[in-house]
Length: 141
Image (cartoon, rainbow, N blue to C red; front, side, top):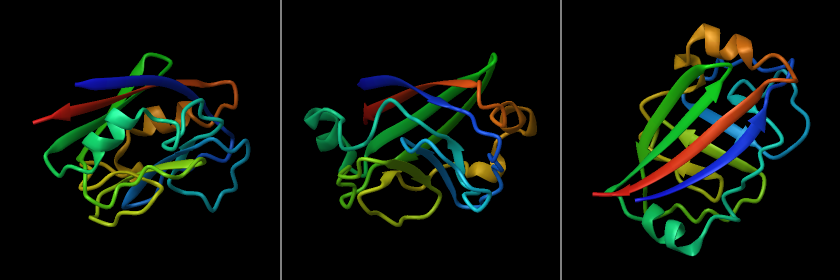
């Protein structure tokens, strides 16, 4: 198992209403149209992950877990790896409930989208001072 910790931050335009994805970005801005984005200014990008993690990510048997905590509230999104996960993007990481894979995709077959996150969790993310403590777990099964 490998795991990585990083931080992201809230923003007043967090909506958390997207029905098929959850996204964290390293960008420092967010518009209301980004309904899947729940955190900005991430200190970790997919492109910067260790090569051993990238090798695990392409396996459909790898369980990938994103754990997020803000103000004591914890949410977890669990999915799997896939052969098309290149982890080449240096801006976004997207957990997808679908099987779609690209350079921005963190995991596929995720058990939650932004709209599935608790209202209390999302409301805490609407504060630009909110710090989201994140962990990524890569479990080879």
